Image 1 (spheres, one colour):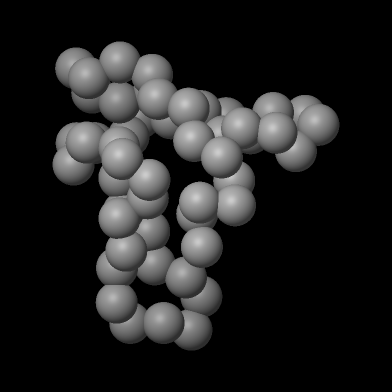
Image 2 (cartoon, rainbow, N blue to C red):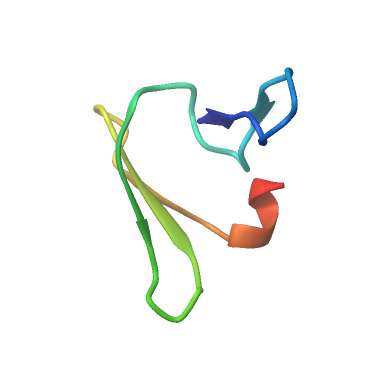
Length: 52
């Protein structure tokens, strides 16, 4: 998964997620981990601080 921060032009890879389509993102209500459901590669959990 890649993201582009507001005001920036370059894309950055997020954590160690595979380079596949992310179908859904879900942030824990307590501000904990971000979960990304991917197309064919399962659900991955990353720490929000790794998102840049």
